Length: 206
Image (tube, rainbow, N blue to C red; front, side, top):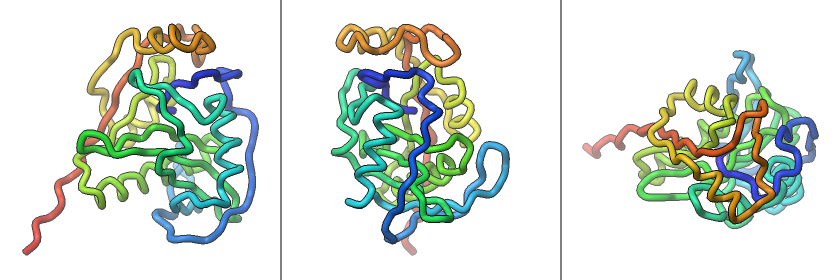
């Protein structure tokens, strides 16, 4: 989770499963550990036209559609660069949407079809590859105060909380009343937390 849904119908939003087959293109990542430490055979590549249906279903499940509101900005996920995770059988396993911002790479949306399948780890590793190749100095994202699972996931992968925007979700709710008052685990939903990890500078050419 990075953005805040404009109209998420189910605040848990974790049960439906999405499948599908995808074409073969250049891979950005492979085997990744899931949260239990198991190995998952996950390949990551840029999204292609054949992924549109799977992406639409994933974003509908997670955010209630293709639009998210984060740090007072509304984004259409269909218009941003996207990485897709594919499992060992060729099935769609998750996606990460990103954008270049202020010298860094922002993860706008990250979601897996099944929690703990290794897709999230593989997608974050691939996003770091993209960020480094683009000369970005950091990988960063925003999540909400209720999303304890996401906070654990990102901090275990080296991201640190660098800012808290108190009332950011309340401001978004004033624009979009469909944003719920209670989030995950019935935690009142009010604030955005920014997490980032600084990336090593590219090695100087000899």
